[in-house]
Length: 215
Image (cartoon, rainbow, N blue to C red; front, side):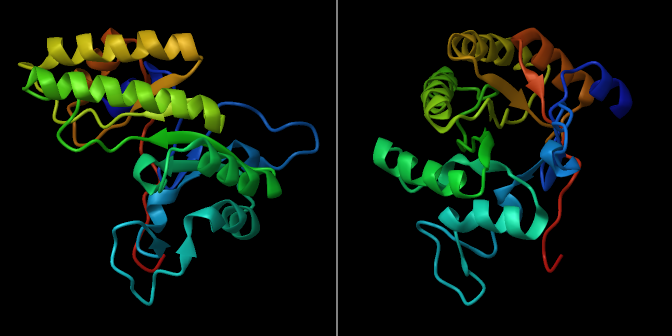
């Protein structure tokens, strides 16, 4: 399958340094109303829990919405789930207050669950991926995020059926929360990835932006 066919055949919500969204700007709004930026793009300069301090780590996670708004005029923030130091309601409330200061919002929460994925060979790891993804859907509701994005692991023809069944459980729960579940290409065969996404009732989040280093 060609990349163009993969994009056309799936529901698109694009983004990884910058992902164009599918809506049109409001009257009098900016074209950047349709753009979301993934915080992962700034991992080298972020102050993150458990990471060693370094001179280049100058950006606090709570300051990200203001930086995106001031520097890029972008108000849609894609957060890695492990950049939140807490999942307590008070912490989320404080983060939402920082978003509100610049009229910003969380547009996507990207889940990095290690070896817990829909493609894991161990059914216990697939079950844990399912449980944790559902928990983050609950957090997404609190944070006002319309989407969560999974890391689907390494898909193969051998684990395709199990991956689809696990994804189905995730998307069924997502519908009860009015949250979308997305996946993005991570070196996968496009035909296989499309079959899993369609079979599991999820959406695509094509990675078209990447930047890093000194850019």
